Image (tube, rainbow, N blue to C red; front, side, top):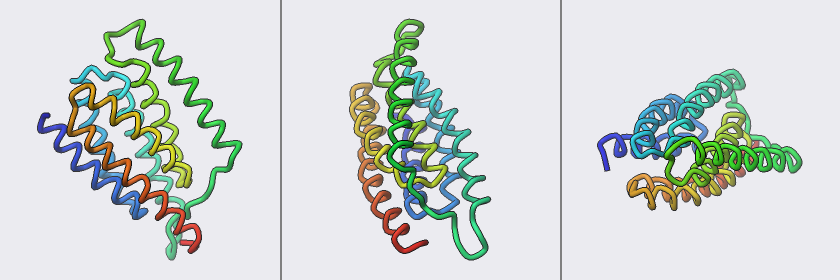
Length: 187
């Protein structure tokens, strides 16, 4: 456990809590958190996760812009549904990316757990994109990613990070419920 892992963990919990609350401040907190975790994962030779942090940085910048642009003076950008066919498309596309990226990392690097790492990368990208678009389906996506991530990080002796993802798992349940409630209330 390093100081960077501790900082990233604290920022991660704060950032997800802000996302659950649909606070636009969650985006800049997330930008700092993913920058910190890019180093943590690179140092642990989880290269797909390190690359994922760079992609997260770009998607988070987009999410911040999208949530800002989509609000009105009286209301924040509303939570919406993606729909069944589009959700299936995201799941299939992420699965194909996971297999392809995992094979590439397995053949060309000394990556630890390349296929599991690639799974985390591809499905996290899908969930992060859905979150940036403020789609309710992002939360079940995070539940799936967090389930796999807990095991991967535990095996790689990133115990604090595994604990963080266990907290993220619980927070994803909370987020799913909170966002679904906001859809019912029209807020």
